[in-house]
Amino acid sequence: MIDEIKGVLLVIGSWLFSRLVPIADFMQGMMLLFLINFVFGVVDDVVKGNGWEWRKAKTFFLHILVFFVIAACMCIVGYFLHNAEEAVTGIRIMCVMAVWFYGVNILKNVCRILITDTPMWKFFNFLYWVLSLKMVEKIPYLSEYMKSGAENIEGTKNNMNKKQ
Image (cartoon, rainbow, N blue to C red; front, side):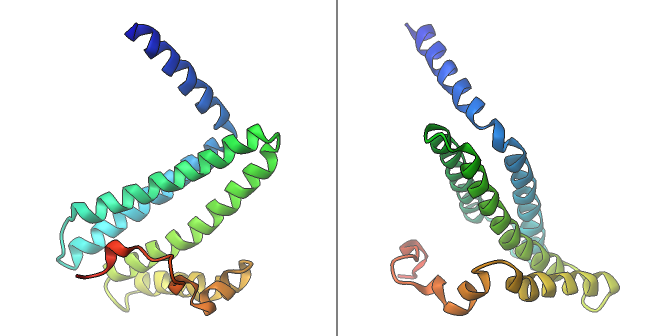
């Protein structure tokens, strides 16, 4: 009985993973981006003297899990709607936005790690400036989002972050 359940789960899992083949490259790229972000975040915390915090690491990995689950669901739903191309396009857009947000965060952490006013710091600070201020104008809706204060919309904040 247990072997039959294992077999059924294996077949279902294999089928699900086969549906994700069109976005495998995206997911590998995003995994690399998230890993780089994690490493530079940890190094930044260590340099600042904060050390390792499991709470921050768990939150980060939970965010990554949510990202990958959303991407996988978009791909599978696109398959069932016979519209896999548009699902992949939606995932591509989601990945581009994640690259921007996490790229800005990585560059910010690198600037904090480096010694101020060294050539390497100036290089990364320039990249941070370009990506955080100038690229905003090139990405549709992003500059409008940044100016609107949409991150303060009621109901979108996590209540767990409020201090008691």
